[in-house]
Image (cartoon, rainbow, N blue to C red; front, side):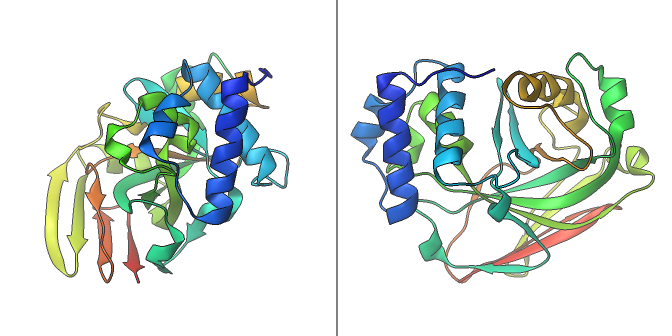
Length: 255
């Protein structure tokens, strides 16, 4: 479903494209002034920015990121989907390097709008440990309106996939333990840390959301399903590692 940009939305999209190209973030004042009126308008800005920057050369996103309360989503640019251990430079980010440890779900078949949670679970053919890196194209990010952050691809910076499993993932999700390690020291350890209890719970909503604005979720699509650890603000020189018991692990160096 295509929705035309409002004049304010068009200005915001233009300013966000300029920020991505120049590395210079908006001021908090401008970001607040240009914040979309609602989530639909914010998603329209997402689409305009992605098209202007040619983020989806295949014509569609192959990965999505979600937040659970309230449910919102943003497409992950193809070039921002990384695999294996990585080094990322702090100068490639605008205002913050936020780390969230997540599970990425891979779909083994298309997932249509109106599906149930049971049907969504049956469509998953693999789960992977992941780190989502947050960045914001405006200053004073934690003071900004929620709709600006949604328009700004929900604060997306990069999505790093680690190892995972393709069989028996249902059993592994039951009260799984997640550990976050920073510079070799354990920073957090918890069981069952997902906000909805299960990362599968939001997939029916996402299926409807993607069907309404694109061609729906397809086989092979990836879904970053929300944080298990909250937000860790990373710093230059840190090595970040995370491990989900019986699932997989992922690591990242900030240089």
